[in-house]
Image 1 (cartoon, rainbow, N blue to C red):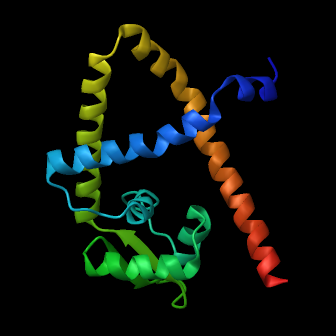
Image 2: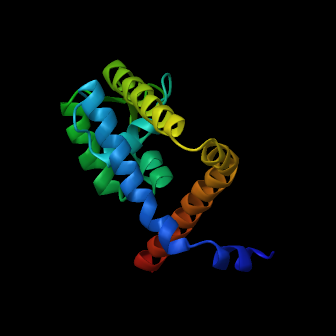
Length: 166
């Protein structure tokens, strides 16, 4: 089966319509279970791009997350006020700003991830075993789908930026 035939066989609209509600349900359940603050999704994306022990510039974050630099600046401002990130001049290049996720942010993400994994595990345990096997088999394809969507998003952003500049 060709990729086009596979795409036609897959109910793309159904998959697309399922992803956001699935994600929102998981976020709500994890937040409620762990009494986590309601951190906006965009801020969570920024935090995920800042693993423990790493720092990134706002420009790097904007590029990697396919976000406008002004949007990232505004996100960082509110995240810093909430104690989720720190911003400091780079010791090697004082013109550059280093952004790091705080210990508080890493703890919140760990709690969120643990609660999310618990909910997903419990839900899968309630499914027919064949569904659990199908989900496990689909994971590599879903990871490749995520990567392809990220690549397309970056490419579209690059095209848009070049068009806006010219």
